[in-house]
Image 1 (cartoon, helix red, strand yellow):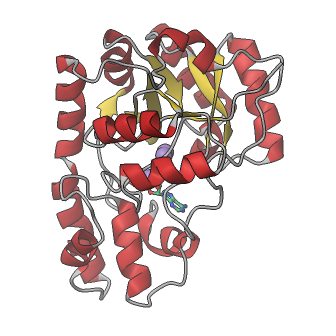
Image 2 (cartoon, helix red, strand yellow; image 1 turned 30 degrees about the horizontal axis):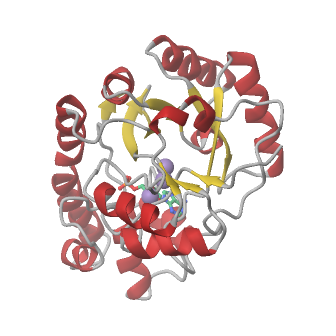
Length: 286
Ligand code: AMP
Ligand code: MN
Ligand code: MN
Ligand code: MN
């Protein structure tokens, strides 16, 4: 059976990636991606350009988004795939989720100022392609540019995670709302990079149980931040919970992201790919 090189998780400069949707599409295509989704954080602005670029290159395309959710005090990311771009409830939901970012960024800047780092708000904004989508990634790029840290990993560890000087807690969307925005628009909800959350087994069980209870149907098994052991763990989770499996690099920028677009192991053969269940939502050229 021909295995599809699907990359269903990536970011453009509409959120915290560095490339425009067209450049990202070209890079995905050059790397052999056959089915692609742009999944900007809480933002749909790049979708039409991503679709046009993908189709012009002959790649299959699915609409995509990565919605920020707060679940039992932890930020969890829910990827949505194959939804209707014009759905009003989805658009309103992600706009509301996005809204708190500017105020959070002001507070992050104040917190960094108290730690002796001035000008972080304007500095982060200079790195942002979309002023409505100020992300910790943009603060990280500013802190690296200013010589406070040498790479992304260090800057998150020293400044931007819980308990560190530039971290400000934030309340994102509710899990059930994010899932309903996606499924209500005809798409499928996917738990993004599950190994990143560091949940206890009980908490993780609660996440997947509630996710399924609200209508979620898939989990990222193969993603840029999963180790080989984590791929095996979440392949097991997909089977145990009867979830479809997804695959995506979570590519953000050349030289910054560890995993290139499309450069991922295949899904384990016993799992059902989410894109098979979304075949009716995939757009192809012509
Ligand atoms: P935000 O949505 O503004 O809280 O920013 C979250 C983004 O920061 C994620 O989507 C990643 O792109 C990035 N990020 C989070 N943790 C790390 C890390 N440890 N190393 C590199 N990037 C990270
Ligand atoms: Mn990101
Ligand atoms: Mn994420
Ligand atoms: Mn992502």
